[in-house]
Image (cartoon, rainbow, N blue to C red; front, top):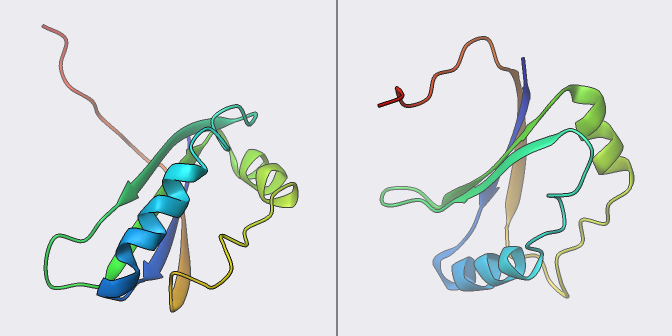
Length: 99
């Protein structure tokens, strides 16, 4: 099954818009990568200052190949004050039932 990488970004309230604009400006940067399956930027609703950057890949090798060819600068100053990366193998998954 797939390989998931979640980058957990700590973002202050005053930097949220900057972070979201930077990700919007990068739209399309990952979609054509071999092995790429899905991307989501998840904004916290309440009680947290941590955004989740969710990517799903065919396998770890596809993710590593994409990382190896990318620049992850983001802009003149960091929008996030901290980052933590979580990596997972998908064990099982489900989607909506067909009608």
